[in-house]
Image (tube, rainbow, N blue to C red; front, side, top):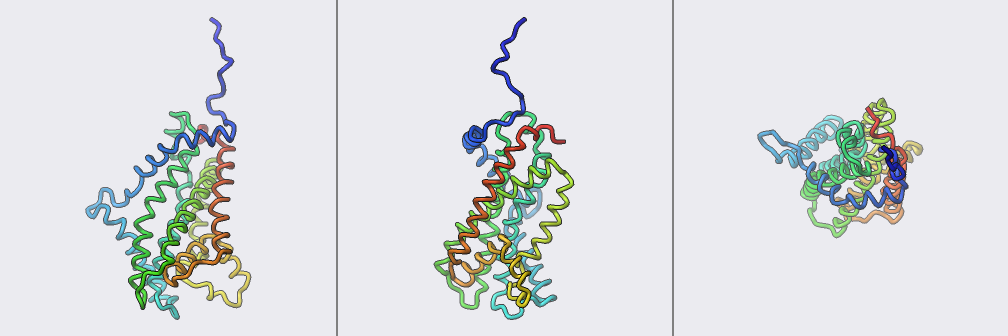
Length: 280
């Protein structure tokens, strides 16, 4: 029996990049549905249920206020250390979610990858959408707490800048997912490196201190300022606590990271498309 195999191709092949991108756009409704269905599951199976979505950032902030504000006294000289800290905590957690979500994402999704034929970049995109929706309540809680703890409570016009900043944070997170997912698919040991890097970033992103603490250490100060996560946190504090819009240079730097990282990450992720089905 003769079979015409002229239209057959490898099962797990890497398509042309533009064809791949068109396929990703075609799956956009699935990405949004999958992302939303996974979101806001914190507290499932507990007595308080979804109340933990609000309680979690509040309790974490209370713990950090106790440790860094009262015990270590890093709050000296700050008018609103609670607002400063809560914004740092919620925006840092949203900024770092991409690294943590991308960690061994391919290994965790092997059931879907081996069962269906689709652009595998759909999985990181759905994870980023889930992170976006998961972060809405904590960030809203953080902004409200920061405003309520201001010495002279007011609603600055700059508060509207939080939305584009939040979008930039999650575009940056999408880029992190692409890079982390491909790297840990190829080198599973890199999971530990990412975990350690996440902890290091917590201490190098100004979550609980101002950059003025590095006066006299210009190199260290420059390293912190070049950290995009620090810029996210500093911009959120300017918008909410100081009522000031970040400079165009800061917005430009944030935008560069927020668009360049997912763009390069998508290309890097696509380059490994034909290998993901074989990952153990």
